[in-house]
Image (cartoon, rainbow, N blue to C red; front, side):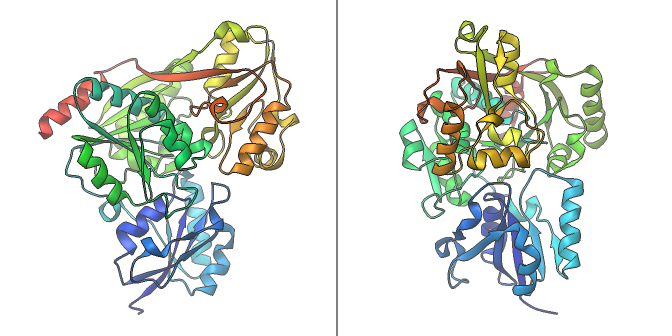
Amino acid sequence: MATNFNCIIMGAAGRDFHDFQTFFRMNTQFRVRAFTATQIPFIERRSFPHSMAGSGYDGDIPIFPESDLPDLIDRFQVDFVFLSYSDLSHVDVMHKASLVQSCGASFALLGPRHTQLDSSKPVVSVTAVRTGAGKSPLTQHLADCLTESGHRVGIIRHPMPYGDLDRQQVQRFATTQDLERFECSVEEREEYKPYLERGLVIFAGVDYRSILHQAEAESDVILWDGGNNDASFFHPGFSIVVADALRPGHEVEYYPGETNLRSADVVVINKVAQARTDEVWLIRQHVDRLNPRCEIIEANLEISVDDPKSIVGRSVLVVEDGPTLTHGGMSYGAGMLAAQQSGVSELIDPRATAIGTIAETFKEYTHLGRVLPALGYSSRQRDELTQTINASDADVVIDASPAGLDSFLELNIPVIRVQYRFRQATGTPIEELVEQFLSSDS
């Protein structure tokens, strides 16, 4: 048997890099020959830098499209392929495992014991069972409550390093100028800007050991804001997991969302006001069966429109949070709900004016209709998004992207911003449960 195993890490620019640094970097038994990339456009055009790969590597580690996987297994004589990204159905995970094994390699998943970092401060994690369930509004709510009660909160976001990995090793965002300094994509702005608007600091990047150390120096509690339905990068003392009442059953059908559900201290069933009673009940049954010890809370996302009168009777183009619509699988979001509630005269179909990669997105995600995902993973794609919006001839753009598109895109159509906030409906207030944990941990 080989004493050094050739490996490929299947990723999407986030969990894959973290797994490399926590498990592979100093483990001489496994040698990573390549990463593969999917879900996010353009990220396979880079390499993982030698500066973070460590002394066991002679140079950068290449990144290839996931579609090249069979050829890569043969080319590098690969022994193990590790899956290191999230928001995949259980069926899709096994299809990937079957592909890998048909090529002769072993298929593997790393667990929390090998990848989660320990913190010197108490950690509260907010994760989910699917993308777009409402993690970030809940995390923002907790950040507000904890700050108001006198805690110094270190907010750390799941990685979105879609640019220069060397420059993005440790990122600290304190002002909107930092978004420009780090050349943030639309998707990064969607996650970071709501915290900055609250006057809060948020950390992200690639090297989460260094990120954690910097956040610990400024904080007395660490608050993890997860991405997709991925698990926390830090071992949580208190785990909150968000389920989506509009996607009942997904809590037991997606990886690693079910893992999160089974290990949660609290499960928040979100968007209950829009769901049927039987849908909420199904989720409750799944939680009771898989994790009977946890507390269940029901909640909603409260939608607010900057100037609701300005869209009454108007033709509108609805722009929604991008990942929620694409690999999150939703066909609408808060923007569409706001349009329906405000009595607009017409919903403009963005497919008529979509160009370039925006048009390709509509072809790939056929469930999308009269909503435009706010995609901007590159400067070119931001330009295509701008042109798609400006060519729509809408009277008003309803912008439900938390990034606030008109703050950095040159739009010639008036923009009305839609925002959403966490509102608890049942159970002990979530901030009280967190305070109880912090008191018991001190």
